[in-house]
Image 1: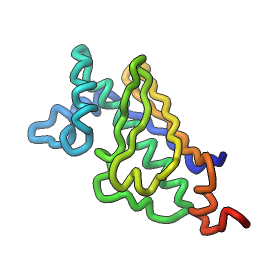
Image 2: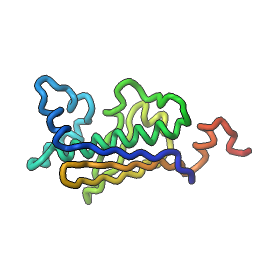
Image 3: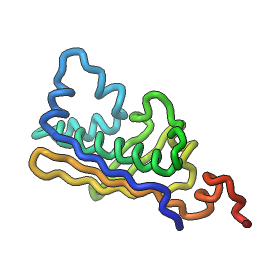
Amino acid sequence: MTILGIGLDLVTISEFAEQLDRAGTTMLRESFTAGERRYCQSKATDPARSYAARWAAKEAVLKAWASSRFARRPQIGDNPYPLIEVVNDAWGRPSIKLHGLAAEFLPRVRVHLSLTHDGDTAAAMVVLEDPGELADLIEGRSPES
């Protein structure tokens, strides 16, 4: 196993809520999947808190992916946010599901996610783990060498 990248992001929930509330904003539709929007809207007391944590997770994935590229361009498109989806299992535990180019560029990579909220801050930490030889392929080395 090899750690390919680590990403951490913090979001101020009140500032994020202001962005979401701006007239004419398309951020929700352009950055979050339908499943994420349903989940966050089901949190009737404070959907912005859930959106902020999911935004932090998406940013943390991008940071981890960028650090895994070893000073090369991340290569997952102009708007990668809807390609990175935060999903919850039956017990509410969050995880990352990749779509499209993100899934193509991160094959077989395990994405470990931790989300937290405290006061007006939401945070996410992501670790990208290669369970096999992906690090060798990224570096251009043959897995046999």
